[in-house]
Image (cartoon, rainbow, N blue to C red; front, side):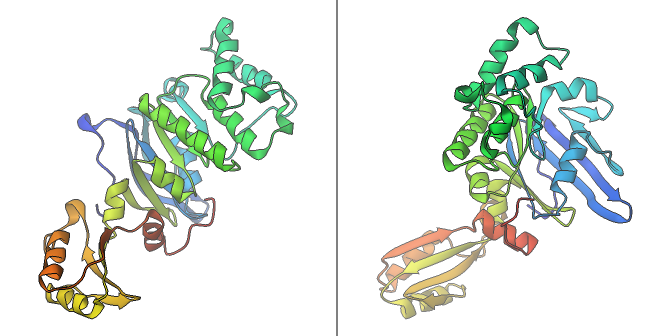
Length: 329
């Protein structure tokens, strides 16, 4: 997939989020520059970028919390902000940390939040609140005041607020912030269950390992611009593949690979060579992995191991943004 090209939506062109030319200026500073974004319905979509890349500003514009300088946004097929009143009740969001009632218990705070929704039914409020607390693992602390919660517990409580109603779209800004490994696994499992039930989940995160395990699609921001968007597998494959041969005959193996038109290198008894892009981007000019192994065996090279690898998401992120990913965005 080419840089900054939005991913195609699912059959029928249905998109949970569709942005075209989304731009935001703060005075003379261009914070978000002509972003085109297409989030397929039913996907778990990872939104990545270093600190200051424009991720949170983009999210705020998508939700109608900030007015774009230019561009258009559709949520769940409806033009925003024109359809705010009908669309936002179908959207749950946790942006820039949860807003809590610090001196109310979790149960009372969620009850008040639910009561603020004119569509909520008071006689079923208690059941909704209890279910939301259970889904995020806070039943045991339901009657504890929010100001006494840890950072991770506050994150879960904010997520519970977003889940008081069934949502078609869930927008989460750093949902694992402050969570311990067990809490992170629980949130990951919850997001998977929501996606399995048909909810589209749009998640901004700095935890690349989590994104790789969780997301079907990703987009990468850099300096206010979208530099890549599409299925996770295509993003990784676009970075190329490499072959690694473990052998006691590294010089002979390197000679075979060079004869196949590759450019091998040898280090610690392992011979490596780039194979070019994989998947749909592969143009067939590089030899297939099975052909490489066959050529090595035919030349009498003793092959102890052979592996074809693609770059990790972190490798691709560094290649696209020119920096590491040790910030929260």
